[in-house]
Amino acid sequence: MAAGIAAAAAVLFCTGCDRLDNERIPVEPVNIVFQTVADWNIYGANSALTWNMFIRSERKPANFFYTAQTYTGYGGVLLVCDVLGNPRAFDLSCPVERSKDVRVFINEDNEYLAECPKCHSTYNVFSLLGHPVSGEAAAKGYALRSYRVAPGRAGEYMVVSF
Image 1 (cartoon, one colour):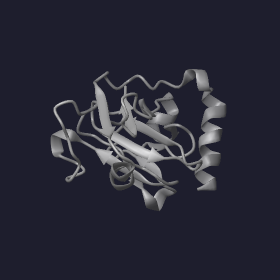
Image 2 (cartoon, helix red, strand yellow):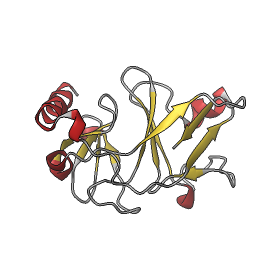
Image 3 (spheres, helix red, strand yellow):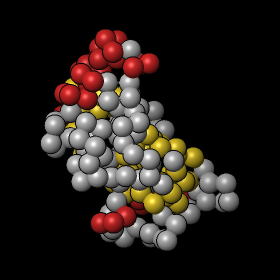
């Protein structure tokens, strides 16, 4: 994992934070509500280096309680818990490919980087906020679109929103 962080830091140093583009994925509504701590512990990302993918159209995860007010962005939502224990959320669509159906996945064999199955760009979602690490995304400065994760305003335990 240290090598991945070092590589990402090198990319950031070369491209500069002000040059990262995390707005290539079209804006789509995001609203995933976790009513209780138990819901969060089952479906959320509650400890470092854990994740889950939410794709309403495919009912992923299968047992999640999707409602009419649940929205999962353009290509789905990747919910992670970063190395410091903070919840983060990103659109699953690769910003290079810009397709709803080309989604990043967590590659446990590649230092837990999010990887595009088509262009093979990688992104650090556990310590660098979805910044590109390698591939065309790193060369062009394309980061994953991020979403907000915070306690709910109406008594919900956690809410992921745009």
